[in-house]
Amino acid sequence: MSINPQDSIPYDDAGNSFWDIGGYKPTVKRVTDGHQLCSDLMALVKERSDLEAKYADSLKRWSRTWANTIGKGRYVRQEIVYCIHDLHSHTLAC
Picture (cartoon, rainbow, N blue to C red):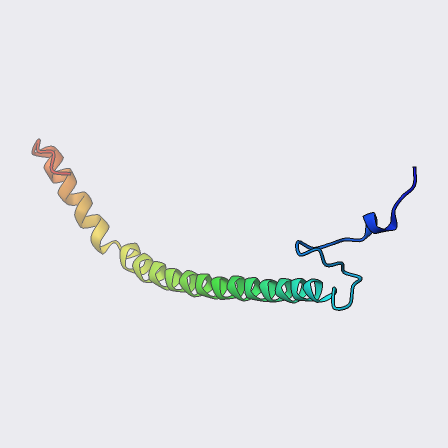
């Protein structure tokens, strides 16, 4: 059994070999496209992480605002008093 050297030469869909004159161009294009795809993906992830960081900061500010307001007991105590009053008067408003 003999090995034909032509069998080991990679060919693209058009029948061109990498080793032919100019045959390297599809490989170079594939590498360039892969690099561009990776760069685009890195930009996407960076942009997404920036958006999520801004969203997390705004949620922290919102949380602090309402924690301070509710933590003073202004709203919670009034609601508890109304619920207890309603329960004692046998209504189920709460």
